Length: 261
Image 1 (cartoon, helix red, strand yellow):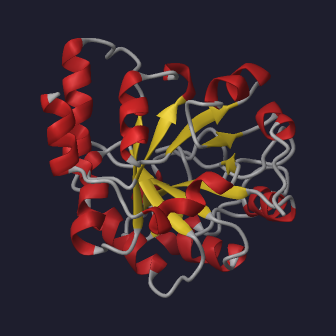
Image 2: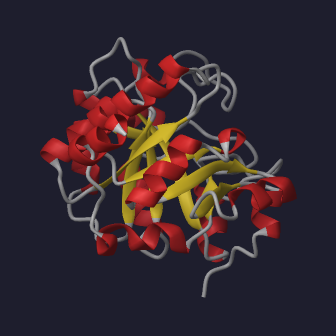
């Protein structure tokens, strides 16, 4: 009871009209990618837009504090280059080709220009606990300036959502949650503390943890729950009644009947 009261005080639910769109879409995890279309690529984003899917993407900062759309800290897995993304300036990163003619690594501004408000966007902001969040939060905030499409930011790091709550109140913000290795009383308390710090408008929850009493309690309070990464018929069964929308890839997208009207 005490935790629920503190939740309501420290992380009040958002107005329904502010976040109602979140549960109306299926989101393509890192774009509509497959063996021939790389993740987080212009080609993957084009495919998602064509199919009427929302898009989830990852961003991290360049050496000159631009927001770059790329998941891994290092370039090694997805490009012919090696080393950390953060060691290079945006101008150089934008010239790095992704495999299979997927295009080059885009800035967040270029990605948003490509989407052009046609489908909603979830931007996962990558961070590290030992690093300052200000540069990447500012970079994303600058990129979003003037963007009129449906858009939300989210992060595992509650400091990110907290920053946007304080400095960009109109930006819809989410807390990404996994309970892996923390299914204990202490882990539960830490989830509540993260919630109080983040003050999110929604949760993006690990599909492996659903059903979850924590997620269900926040959902009852009015926070939408999205779930990642939905990949199978079993996952789709799990989110029914436990989440409001899937962040999906592969079979999860095919089976969800994802194309929007």
